[in-house]
Length: 591
Image 1 (cartoon, rainbow, N blue to C red):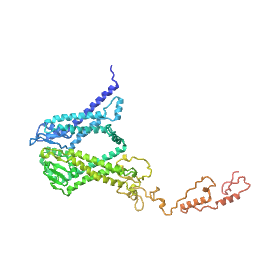
Image 2 (image 1 turned 45 degrees about the horizontal axis):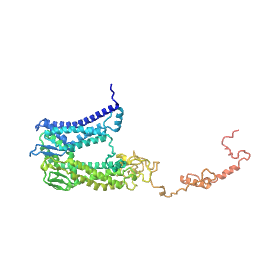
Image 3 (image 1 turned 180 degrees about the vertical axis):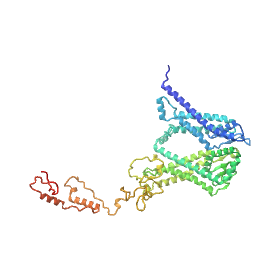
Image 4 (image 1 turned 60 degrees about the horizontal axis):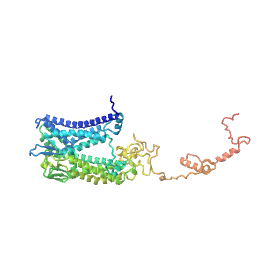
C-alpha cells in the first residue's frame, strides 16, 4: 500500500483550489453573458420584424457584453458602406460584469487566518495572488470566446481594445475582490517603491489622512454626479414634448419601445456625467463642430434622434438658467471641504486634537486631486464615437473635465475647509461646546477621535445625554425648564430642584465672598497647640454660625469656669476626684 504524505496532500488540495478559482472566473463571466443574452433574445422574440435570425441576435448580445467591459465595437453594415465605430459605453451595464468578477475573486481568495487553519487540517487554499490570477484567467477565457463568436455579427469587438481596457477592467475588479477578502488593508507598500513611500505608508497617521482624503473625494464626486443628474432631469422636464416625440418615433411597436427604454436607462449615468461636465464649464461635444457649454451652444449640430438628447440646451448664447449650472461644482467643492473638516476638527473633540491648518489644506488638496482624477476617468468612458464623420466625437472631453473639477474643488474647497475649521475651533463659551474640555485639562479617558463613528461627529451631548446641534446653541440651558422653573415632561430637573451644581461663575465673582485663611500646619492632636486654643475655637464657631444663618447659639464662653466650679464642689473624701455629680433623677448608685 502507498500512503500519501501530508505535503503531497496539501499540494494536491492547493491545485484543486486553483482550479476551483479558475472555474469561478468562468462562471462569473458566463452569468453576465448569459443574462444579457436572455434579455436580447426576449426582445428579439417579441419583435414582429426581426432583422436576423437567433444567431445574429446572440452575436449582437456578445458584442454588447464586450462593450460593457469597455471594448470598442465596429458596426460593419452602414448606409455609406464604411464601418462605423461604437465606443460609448453604457455605464449602467458595467455594474453587472464588474460586480460578478469582484465577487468571484472575493469568494476564491481566503484570508491569512483561514489559510493557516486549512494548512493545519490538510486543506490548503490558494494564495491571494493565485486566486487573482486564476479568476482573471478564467474570466478572460470567456471574453476571448465571446469576441471570436461575435466576429460575424452586426456588432463585433475591435481586437485592439480587448487587451486595453477589457483585460484591465477585469483585472481591476478581481484585484478589488481579493483586497476585500483580505480585509481591505492599506499597506504595506511594495518592496520596489521608494523607502520614503514605504515609511509614510507604514505610519498610522498617514493612513488616516489618506482615508479622509479618499472619503472627501468620493463625496465630491457623488455630489457632481447628483448635480449633473438633476440638471438633466430639469432639462428633460422643460423639453418633455421633444423627448416624447423622439421616443415614439424610434419604434412603433411595444417591443421596440421597450428596447429603446432599456437603452435609455442604461445611458442615464452617462447623461449625469454629461450634465456634470456642463456645470464644470468644458461642456460636451455634439459632433466635430459643436460644443455645449454654459456660455452657449455654437456650431453645427450632429444629433441623432434619441430621447435623452432632448435635454441638450438650445442653440445660441447661454442665459441665466444656463449659468445656474455652475452651482453644481460649487456644491461639490463644499462637500469636499465639509467631509475633510469632519475629520480635521471633529465636533466632539477638544481643539488640541484638531489638525493643523497645513494638514487640513493638504488633505483637502488631495481630495480635490482625487475628485478630478475620478471625474476624468468616468468622463473618458461616458463619451466616445457613435459613428463616423461628424459623430466621431460625442460627449465630454476627459482631459478638460478632469482639470476643471480639480480647479473648482481646490479653489473653493481649501478656503471653505479653513473657514469651517475656524468655526469649529472658535473660542469656547457657547452652550454646545461647554462639555468639551480645554487643551490644558487632562481628558477623563483617552479616546481615539479618528476612529469614532460618523454619527457622533454630527452633534454633542448635553447633560441629559441628548444630542445638541449647532443650530440650537442655547437649547440645553433653557429648553428643559419653563417660565416658572418647572421641568417639562421627559425633561431633566430644573436647577432649583437639582442637587447637582450647574456650571456657573467662579465663587470669587459672588458679592460678599471672603476666602478662608490657610489652616494651621501644626499637628491637630496636640492639646496645647493653636488648633485647640480658645481663640481658634471661637473663630471656628463664629464661622459656622455665620454659615448657618443664625441658627446656632453663641459660643459658650463660661464653660471653662463652670467646669472649674464643679471640680471645686466635688467631695474631697471621694477617692475618685473626677467623678461627676450624680443625677438626682437618674438611677442610684449600685451598692
